[in-house]
Image (cartoon, rainbow, N blue to C red; front, side, top):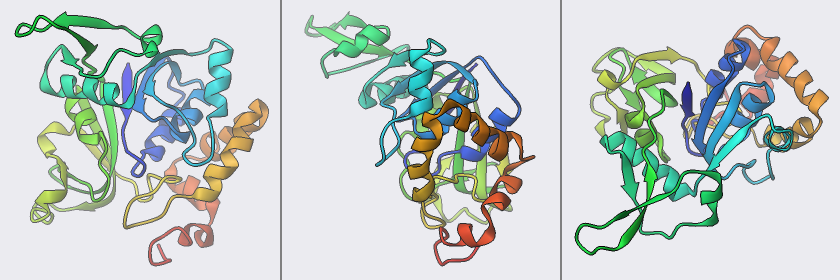
Length: 271
């Protein structure tokens, strides 16, 4: 199965990723523009055989040690694109097209993924293309959803909408859940209408250690700590055992951090 865990900078669906790890899913193809800690943790847990991506790193800190280790050991295969090419693939998938034409030149990233050109029917010029990307499942985390399945996002959206519209199935977790029609006036924040969403789960702070704009900040301390944790394979597995396999759900995961620790992340200071 091809899985796209969306979320640009904030609203990264860590609770969903942790549950996938907890259930010991495997042999997935993970797709994402800018994979960060979410995929480092999933790769460390052996969830994926293949990664389709554009740049991978720990934002503002460095690289992804578990990802690097898996590549060096031959445990995962790669298909790499530029950021624009990844978004173009999703645009094609969302539009129901087989490929997307590019104006940008072909780079040496073609060594790590398929490449093809088409002949422009108007000028005869060779036009670089990328194939459509249609994930089996795209998972998004949002600030609000209603009982009709409508999803609402405030702040950065990135490629969340394209990744959702390109997918065969969309599943969401949400910070807040409301009755139908309560959020109808927030049309400008509508990410996706409910008829395109298969399921929604109410998971407060479901993006931790990333952030949800207007609700809580990124756990920068943990992002900084993760490099040391992930560099050591045994320490990395011990962290997975304690914080993911050793917790029954996201609520227990959060309780291990403690209320005082979480409160310092929350906008306004209290959950």
